[in-house]
Image (cartoon, rainbow, N blue to C red; front, side):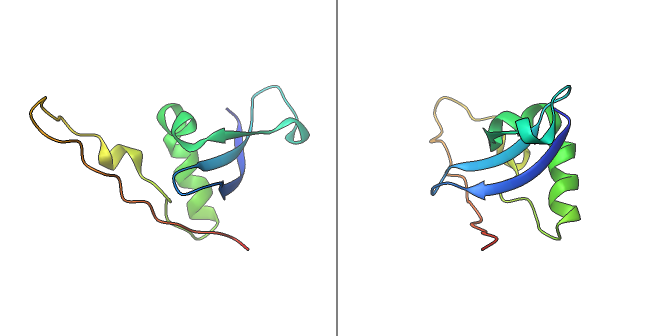
Length: 84
């Protein structure tokens, strides 16, 4: 991944990022699921949202925990933001 060019909330839990991949032009950027981009390059996402004066819409790293088999999974709180 080279650069993030946009963000959209496509549904209640469907965060998407417009990603320009290495070796491709901005015109060839693709909309990718937030979680797919977060894992390998979370620092690029932090920089993108900071540059645009916004907090991360969803900090996946903050929601990773050691959950035993006996515990119920916790729901992830989503901040909904749109740039209309």
